[in-house]
Amino acid sequence: MTMTDETRTTGITIQPQSPTIGAEIGGIDLSQNLSDATISEIRQALLDWKVLFFRDQDITTEQHLAFSSRFGALEVHPFGSSKPGHDEVLAITHDENSPGLENGWHSDVTWRQEPSLGSVLRLLEGPEIGGDTLFADMYAAYDGLPDSVKERVDGATARHDFTRFKIGLRKQGKTEAEIAEVEKLYPNPHHPVIRTHPETGRKGIYVNSAFTKEIDGMDADESDSLLQLLFAQAGYPEYQVRLKWQPNTIAFWDNRSVQHYAASDYYPQVRRVERVTIIGDAPYYDAAQAPAELPPRPFMGQIELRRKGNEHVR
Image (cartoon, rainbow, N blue to C red; front, side, top):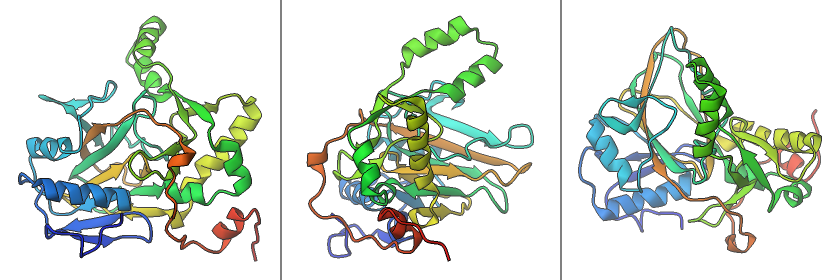
């Protein structure tokens, strides 16, 4: 269900930021104890728009946690730097001594058996220009695939791994034996290449360049070729929305239906954020759960030609 003014009862406003992804939410103060009705409308807006932006939210860490916990239990990131006294708050600072590394398309913690439902990110300090975050609609990315590709990936699974964090562990001086013990705690999951969203029933691409290693049951060349094609789907601007951060901006995104990319174009300026992540459930693929009707695709030009298996450049 797409929420309209007629179905909205709590006074919040929803301003779409692109045709299919991203909406700015107004008329709300996240420092308050929000009603169940308001939380329900925010959740529906998240399902409709996949990422929500809240401006001018001068909240405390406790209020950040309280808002996030209304949507589910919160995770503790095993490899990140938690805020002292608040294990569920991932504190991320980039500056002259720690350049940004998140400028690759990804969905958070897909190396978990039960990856996150979503993340709530708050900007504490940012550069005057730069440091934007981009979000890509993985429903649109899937729908834009040629039928011949969909036939190859529907129902397939792929292995995910926290390889990048292993590099960090080695830099910290961890031995291979110690890393092997960590791997026992977080064994490689095999998630569907195309995920069925548990609340909307829609299909979305669920492989990402940060954590997906290979498609199960394929030889290496075929898997690599297909993964590169799927990774590239996030890169179409038509599928994206771009957030220009301001002080006290909060972004809340659905990791089950989007990927994101944090632009690293502000070195050596400082960017400080805090992220709270909501625990999700095990991804699955169920063709029978797909909704009977999908919204019309607004995308034309080269995207539509590629979807039809053609390509033309003037």
